[in-house]
Length: 450
Image (tube, rainbow, N blue to C red; front, side):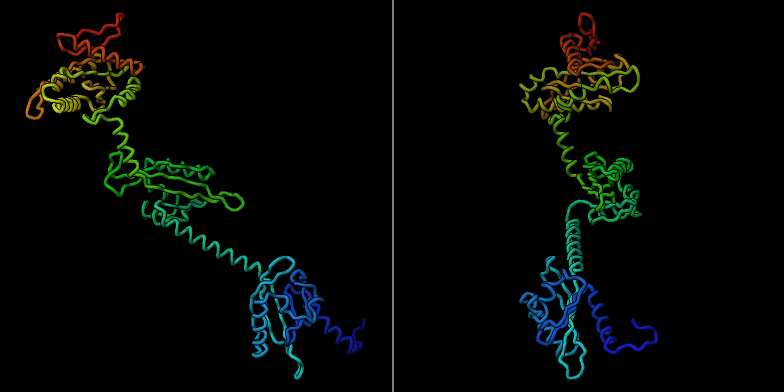
């Protein structure tokens, strides 16, 4: 080793000057080739031998184009010819099959400065851009998927929304914005305020479940109506169904909630109408027998005040068969409708009226404090259903036999109905034609007409 100030041998200095570029080139991640004008490889340097198609020694003095596909080789030769002609470097991209698989390479070809009169040389630098290509491909895929989801969200007939884990509304589709209107702020509170005050706890409860990792399906909420009707009879509400799903990021950490809001007012209206039809007598618009029996199951439980009870008024239209025989069934139907209308006028607002048979009606009366009040209610009903009725061009006499039972303890619906029926038949057999109150006497007989 030469000491400081000692002369340096020219040959040794030349070797050092040549070794330094060799070392630098060999440490590069790129693959560097030296190529003559015929495309023959004169040298190759890289720190990543896995990017070489064949071992280095197999490349030397061979055409580099032979390492590529026919199409890529042709393109490479065209680029090399242009660089030789213009002296300007060019860059192009191609694939290359190496030991680790197919890699995307970005290759730059440039003219090497050589002494005047010396053969021209080209420097070829190939850089592995597979990761960038894969990332670009993934970005393109995600953008396409995002566009697809965006298009889907706008074509679906439901409101879609996303809430992040900070409680901010991160996304709403056009349908959602139409349903909830302009939010005062992009917050859960603002979104919850879009439903009616009574439903806001339900809405927030479903959101809380979703934020805790539990799905919520078909939660019914009501919202201000944009239409003029609703199944509840209110004109300012829509019936909506809310479904929620928790969102998580790649490692499973909760990241928010996605929700779907569907306007089901029309379906609810149809369901309500079907329920009404299933529980209402089509001729008189009173409850039918099935609906009455279901209501009777709770007759002893619908009183709030201690000691209160419930009454069942049972009435039968006298001589309906004679009306049918004289005026036809159309006349009998008019008499039944008139009786139902008079019952509605005589009954209390809290009472329920049912036609349980051809000529039989019952009135279910909650909140009746004692038997005497039950008799007063039944008497008013009996008086209201005693009249001369117009049935088209003729008149018919409306007369009824009325029985009533009262209870302040739980009883089977069939028992209550049988008691009221027994009292009604006692009234029908009586010459006094007054209201009969059923009493649970030891002999089981009903009380005499009142």
